[in-house]
Length: 276
Image (tube, rainbow, N blue to C red):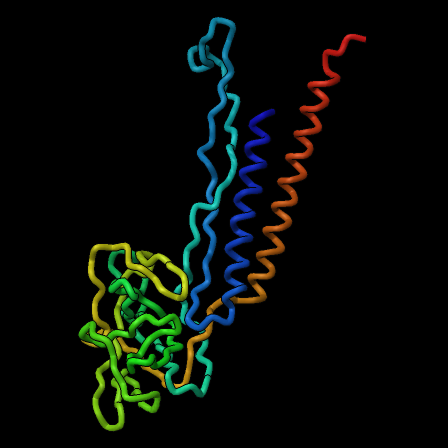
């Protein structure tokens, strides 16, 4: 009886976490370059039930006896996996908005899936991070930065400096600042995007110790930088709302199971075995 409590409660917790993930996706539906998370639900290990005889022996020692069966021990949300499919391009008209349009990318031999391209940025702590959010700006020191003030890096890992916002960027990411070559946008090739972990504000950290490759020096990689455009979030609003309703219904069903177990336990404690 008590195992039913744990199984129903585990289902409620899993659906609650899934609901929180979907809510975060919908909240970032207008965030440029945002990659929607997808949930991965797994069951806890099943338990094998065996009936004991009066001598304390298992059914395996008695010819003709059978195992009682298996008992599921609940479900849990193992992880939230980002969906790295490219979002739609939206024209913003802002000169500092630079959308990264991914073309052909080599297939990773280990995963059998294509890699992904990202802008390289540097945080205030001097650490390299990766982003698809090309909503950039020019700070007071004439550095090209993200909306949160992280430095946009060139192909050599250096800060990009421009005179003002009136610069131009060609399709290959080369920045021309009033006729001066101000560098080329650093675009990294992450062969296995699943090695990336979200840190918030559109930034991702690479967990793997292997350094990412440069997309600009790889003849197998094709991409284009579009100035005055941003990459929209790849969140599917309609599907996310449907999934939220499904998660809510599953949570509600587990809740009713938990309430039924509670009523049964109350009856067993207060009425079963009562002497009239």
